[in-house]
Image 1 (cartoon, rainbow, N blue to C red):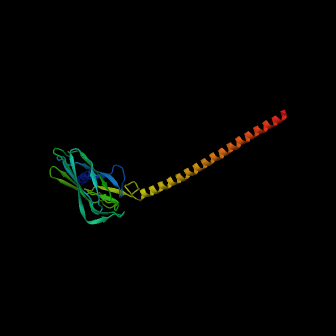
Image 2 (image 1 turned 45 degrees about the vertical axis):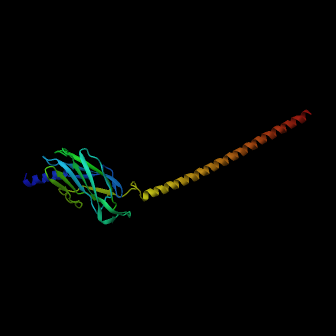
Image 3 (image 1 turned 30 degrees about the vertical axis):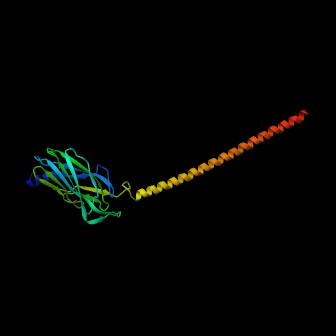
Length: 241
């Protein structure tokens, strides 16, 4: 095998073990909240990964983020005022957004060779993009820094050696916090309640009318019986006389 072929194989192996982002099988929706997990493999044979710095896009601002605790690590969420406010499709104007999250290993901690770690954060997704790109820098205790920062290539193009983690955003299905879908659901619910109330009132009216008719029928029946008995008694009295 030629040297070029060996380098190509090694390069393919490196690219296959890059830092990635995923949402655990749950689709991330535009304008909704999503828990994003960054999976970080240690690719160095003689150094530990001791820091991960994930940068957030400014044009597609994330207004808030909360990190999930990782034993032995600390997390810091940094926010900053945007140079130019970004107006989302729903009309929300974002003036401050998350700029980066830094996970740092404590003393004696870190991802050792042949280990990987997962670092999660719940964040409010914007609604003005189909793909979120999160450039990440992986720091080793040897001083080496690997940047996973290359934007996604066009469809059909070869994957870069150090791609940035990405998350696809789906159109909102109305499961997020607030929105027209919730209002529609409330309106529909109110309509259903009104219909049910109308039907219930009609049923009660018919039931009441039935009771009245039944009572009248019972009264007529009792009256007829009493008249029949009286007539019989009169005839018997006349006969005996």
